[in-house]
Every structure is written in structure tokens, then in C-alpha cells.
Image (cartoon, rainbow, N blue to C red; front, side):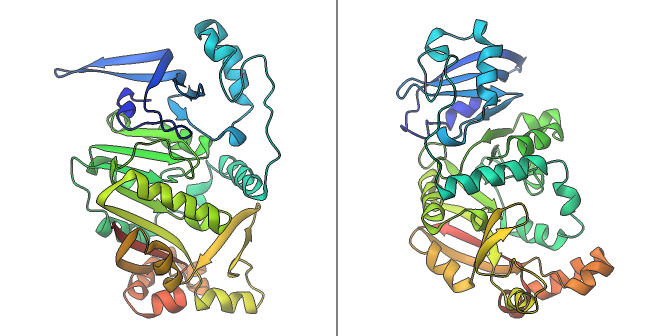
Length: 354
């Protein structure tokens, strides 16, 4: 964890920005300008609500109480000689001599925990399932939309294993990449160069509780995340969080599943279940398909859409024959009116904060 992450952080539960750091393992580098630090393991402590948040393998975790991991108790026990009593015995949501005691989970929380387990389990397989050559046309759309400036501070919301993240690390001053799958973040971290690690901040979060200060980011990008958030109320809460942390006139780029005619036809023919308006993918991962007008209406209170395109126009027969041919056809279809209405598996919207 880079120490300059403190320039952006606040407690996601009490909005306090005064956070105390207790490093356990740390390495430092000195440049001609300033001394910077990188924390491999340690704890961040909120001095207002008394919650503690672990740093494990260089990754800060600031998850909601109900989604915290039993491994955090093991972390306290492992480093009990290096941590103060206020964290070991008097902190929230649990301390070293307590068992994790959660309230009864509601349906939304259960769905989130289920997806975390799936994403953790598939972290080292994800890019085999979705290789760049299959989704090359989609990456080209992001490159055209994401014209970041060298001094921008960018948030990648739901970065996963970094399929899109790695495209933009070198284009901005700071890139904060967050996901609720710790294993996905760890997989991404291991693939970064030392120079990239200086510019990126990896944080495990629930996007409904973003641990960042108000109006701190110049750009936010979210690829395929909001369409997997269970319940409309929860999607609204996450969108409100994006609106809060984004600067006025900041850019928000979002992709969601498109409720296309091709999906509906495949459901009608019994070839797919993911074309329903809402349901569960394999592994009990929730999904929601937006229509273009529905997406426009949902974003409108906070964001003005300046570009909306269809992406991932995968035609089943061609997809099985040639990934390169499929990518070429994807590019062509995405430029036609048929993309959003008929073919596109996803929609990508570039918006500006009102």
C-alpha cells in the first residue's frame, strides 16, 4: 500500500479522514524530491468510530462489517505483539478475543458474499475465460473514451484482475483500483511492474461504501459491475457513492448488461438464461439487464450521457469459429444502430457529472 493513499481516504462508515497507521512490515524508497513508503502489512485505525482495517500483502481492505473475513482474526493473532491494545481488544467490528459475530444477512448481503467467493475462486482463470483477443473491440472503445490527463486521479471501480485497469495505469497521476475480491486484487498486483506499483493503489471495498473523500476523483470507470449488484436500491446507493466522490464535471464511464433482442431470442429458444431481465448466472452471481432508455433515465439525476455505444457484439456461431473474426465484426456492428437494439451484450456510456 502506497502511503499517499491517505490523500484520498476517509472512513466509509463515519466519514472521518483522520486515520492512524500502524505499519508492521514496510519498505521505503528515497527520491530526489521526497521520501515515500510502501506498507506490506499493517493496520489503519479510524480515530472516530474505532474501526480497524488490515493491510495484507500490500492491499488495504476496508470492507463493511458484515462482509469481513474470518482471516482478519487470524491476522490479529499473527501480529498481536506488534499492534496496540486499542486494536487488539477495543476496536470494531471485532477484536482478538472475539469471534466474528454478524447480524443475520439479508438477501443482498448473501448475494454479495456468494459473488465474492466466485470471484476469489476464478481470479486466476478470469483472463482465460475473457481473453483480450475476444474483447479487443471493447478495449478499443474504452481507449477512445478514456482520454485521461497526466495529472488526473482516476478510480477503477470493480477492477477485478485488471483486464481494463492495465490499459490505463500509465495515463494518469494516480489510479485507485478497487474490488471486493481480495484474490483478484492480489492477482492484479502480482502482474504489475515496480514502476506501475508506484502509481496504483489497490483497495478491497464494497462499492456501496466507498472509503474516499468527497469530490476527490477526476474520472471514474466501472466495467461490468453495476449489472451484478443485487437490488435496485443497492445499485442506487452505489451510484450515489460515485456521484459523491467524483469532482464536478468529472467523467464517469460505465458499462452494464444490455437487454438486447438477441438475448431475448436466445432465452425464448432455450439457449440461455442470462437474457432474462434479472436473474442469476452460473455460481449464483446476480445479473440485471438494462435497456438503453432505462440506463439513460437511471443516470440522469446525477450524470449527463455524452456517448452511448453497444459493445461485445458476439455472434454465437462466428464466436466459435474465430475470435479474431468475431472481434472484427464486433467493431463493425458497434458503429451501427443495430448494436444497442439487437446485438450488444453490453452498453458503454460516457457521462459527465452535472
